[in-house]
Length: 138
Image (cartoon, rainbow, N blue to C red; front, side):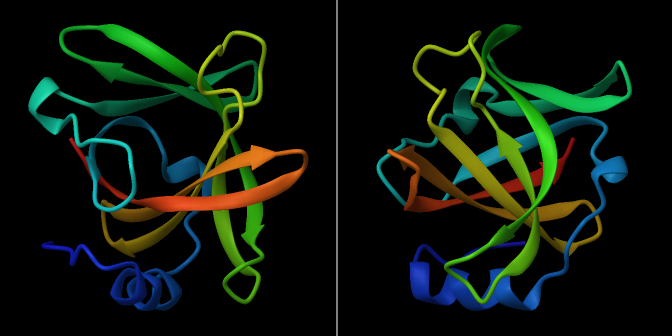
């Protein structure tokens, strides 16, 4: 799917999506940064890998062959700044992460195997929306 690069148009697509289940996130997904300050590293093979560990779904970001950064836990949540929509949250708030610890991604399903995510920085408990990205099953 071709996405617009306008937050207002993406808000509508995100709102019209549906809440995915945690269980459907397995394997790898291509990442395309759509809006915001983070550059698009799709050319470098930016992807998210999801897997199960000790009964939890977790994951990590990968670029190039296998350089990993930003480990996350997959959780249920809400998007309080968009009518409390149900979402999947990628929570980067763990000690392994130096630069990505304050990041939270909120994801909705747009089509089978295609997702739209909003990324936030959490500063002093306040979520600050920074932009959109898409995920596509690899």
